[in-house]
Image 1: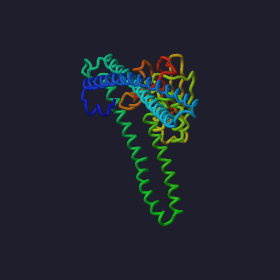
Image 2: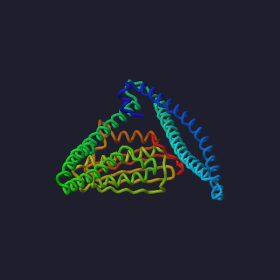
Image 3: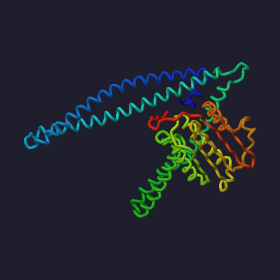
Image 4: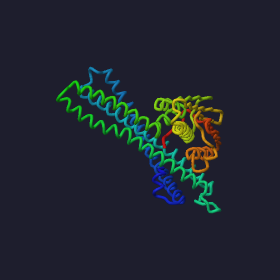
Length: 363
């Protein structure tokens, strides 16, 4: 769901609820269609598998009587075998795609229904009995503001980084093309420079993708993704970031993995952004402690700190949003900081163990 677009299209939380219901109904319709296609594809796959087995058996018979079988029959059987294998391969790919789409839609439906239930539990109506905006209204506005702020930041970074680099590529390719007619050695030098620039830009684009939505989060889970993120952050910033994971490594529900990753991303980024004059001495520690049914995350730094009482007075939007999300998941959060003595943010979330074999989809 695109909250930025919803902000443009809706003016009340009642409209938001309606859009949410529309999205949920569409997801259910899509799931019904995909399930039907999946059933049909499975039946077709079974037929193709049987046909492929029959043709394979026929080929084996031909091999045993190779000298007595006409070449035309051999060629026809061989072509039929190739055709059956290709059809089988395509159908298996289609079936896998439909299965992934089915899992994806099921996850989306569960997610939308959880949002609906949460809004209902807060007696959502835009305003409470006192006439003031409700907790859900404030959280909704906060979600929009944070998302739009992040989009603006990434947009600026893309413009100042890859977009500018691609403009330079166009200019450099024109220079190289001219040098090929005048000085081949110089053209080679320019191509080397161009290749280095391309590699740098490629890495920058990968970093942006990591910030937007790391694919590892879906494929490998939270902990490998956090390791990758911390390593990448250290390389980019040059800061001392230490990661410590305690307990049995495992997968969590999708929404918990996304929430924890985004929280760590925000907290580590905050430590770097709010201490620009202490980059050579700044140390950031990230600790993840996994219990039987509780995961605890702590991010601390030795930066300049802040007065925690100011969090409720217009500042600390990211921290307030993290707290809202943690509490939505039945957890709790603590913020400890004093000016000149760094900051420590910790939160804990209950969870139910997820099977390692359970497929995880992206939504």
